[in-house]
Image 1 (cartoon, rainbow, N blue to C red):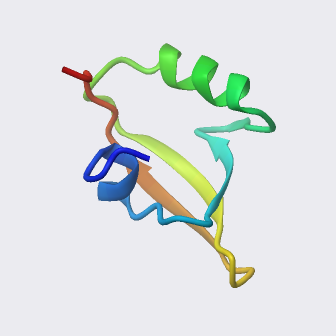
Image 2 (image 1 turned 120 degrees about the horizontal axis):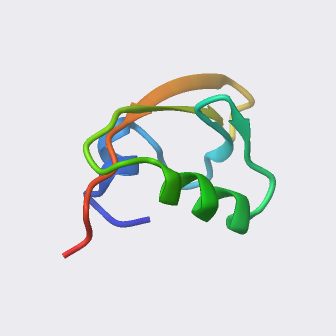
Amino acid sequence: MQNPGPGHTAGLREGDLLLAVGATRVDTAADLAHEVFRIPPGTPVRLTVRHPTGGYQQLTAVPGILT
């Protein structure tokens, strides 16, 4: 995870399990890459995560352009 990148800024931490991007379930790294590719830079997107402690949370990330 890029630090500080969009995920870190949104609240993702090491050990979190990303379950969904928007309304789309994420099962693999390929699923994640496909969904992130579809989101225009600067568009907020909801992430559903499960923390190592077992709690679930919805975060909002704003993807950007990697320079």
